[in-house]
Image 1 (cartoon, rainbow, N blue to C red):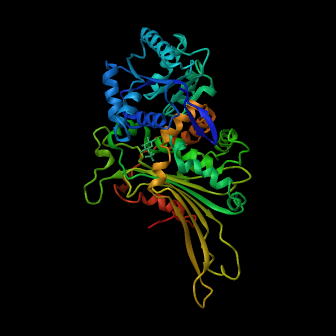
Image 2: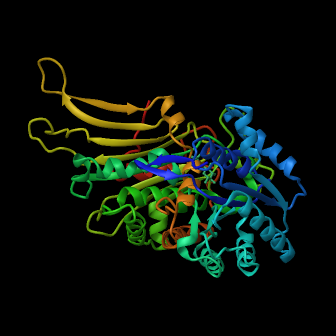
Image 3: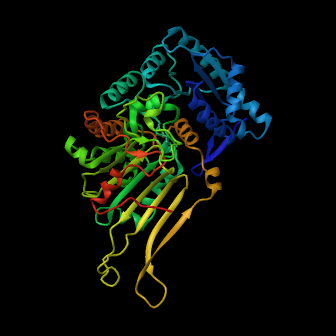
Length: 496
Ligand code: BG6
């Protein structure tokens, strides 16, 4: 029976696809990927003509695998029948990524499932595992002819994509031996978030913003990705990464690119325009890095209940790694010359908040903005945990006065919004199956971002941060982050 779904106002046939998941026993698969695939199944994007092969080193059976998947999707299940139907499409193949023979077995299984489910040769290879295996896997996929000549072959890979420009280039080179750029879907899960995708709608579908989105009208932009969680179980990874590699190189610069890019003419232009703006970030000398970027590391909380970063079992006692970054990014182009983009991110802060604040220049009315000036208008895009917008506007205070009052025109979506909006991984896996690369990062974006971040990393690695730890877990972050803006007569937007 043919199944259909509506996408972008169009009636679409259900997708035919075989997803081969490397890292099927891992945490990401369990927490995010199986639920995402299940939601796609429930919504009819995939129905009869799909199969998932899970692979990893462990010697699991199909039944055991299905049991694991079952547990991961349990909370979403509406009927036992639906669940069993879904699980029947899952298969497990133990796999050693270095063993050629295993790829031969995998190929046989793929071909068998292709026939059973009439998949038409469409393949998605999802590498949910450490990047040091990417090259070996993709090389074998090609050499052992797992790439099909008739359908599509797409590769999804997770971050981190390298640890600096050189290693990213090397990794990319390895992948490109087997896959073309237009077959490589590099995940940045922020690009799958509802409100991140909303940035373009706000910018380009509103004359009031579209017309004012430039250096003449915007004073500065703030991008804050603040986290309440500590490094949790990931101290070992984090101590080689730090906030700069973990959040700035990817999520923050991606958001910045969406906020700053030139207006695209088509969705296909978005990545091209993001690449351009990332290549226009003003590179800093090491001296300029020290002026424009500050770092922090959390110590124990003031009440002593939350441990400091260096107390983590997998972190060095004298670790120099930052768990907080704030910086001023400048873009050298006509639209943004001289407009600072202040960015910040950190762990173990007082609250989780992901938000973009676009602060406009003050109005200049001699009537209302005399000596003290007028408060700036601002559009804030709340990404998470609250999702919505806030437009800050001035009007006359009530009564016999010409004093101003500032109002917050706020639209915060209720819980049904997040229930209705697809989860990031659900959206991104569907995009990949449908062949839409808009919300995946192009190699040139990755390259430009690493080049920008590398100078900061090198500058910081060359000097011990004597001041670490410089903020308490559960606080608002280090003093230097506030000083960065204060010295330019600005401040981070505070909310109640
Ligand atoms: C990941 C980082 O990419 O993003 C994590 O590796 C971070 O350290 C996470 O916690 C934040 O994502 P989100 O969606 O919870 O804001």
